[in-house]
Image (cartoon, rainbow, N blue to C red; front, side, top):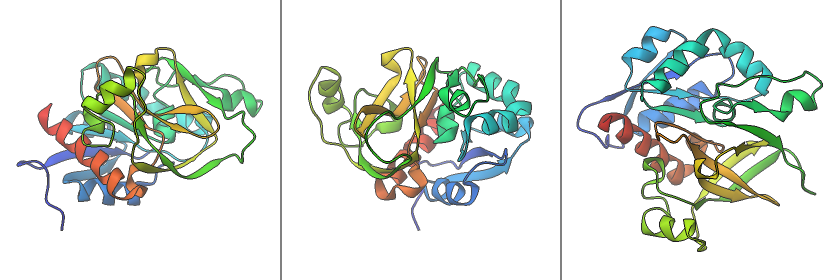
Length: 233
């Protein structure tokens, strides 16, 4: 069994709003050393060391389902506490998405914790983008500590260098386009370079477009980084 990277057990609230990979996310977080509570109770968010917002599906449905939890999630983030969005959960951290417009459903407002929108792949490739892609770290952030390209190499990448990264598993048709380029922590390529990891200016709100719980040792490293970050906060 993998040992916890922290001396004290870290509590994580895994948000249950009907669209998350709760079982696999729970297993991944537990392997990373966390004590996980699957919950839709805002009081549990406040009691936890960190909150994970998972997600699979459409942006509109995600925001509608999570609507009753919007204020609690926003309060958690604005208090400087760790909030980690995965896949759709990462997209929900942004302001809006083209997905609802593409489906003829009009504009839908996200959590607006990382200003920007989610845009559809406009490349001559199969959509959804599904499979393993290499990560390239663009700048330092605790969530990518120890991932190839982080640290000094990450600084080189942000200065324009090319850094080989590790691989992660993606399933998505839309990708984040933050208003602030500095929100991009790591990228991947699918006919266009797109953000694979994003974070807010304060650093406590972040997300991965890929599924760390399905991304082998690289994903486990990301989840351990999250647990360590929660412990340090």
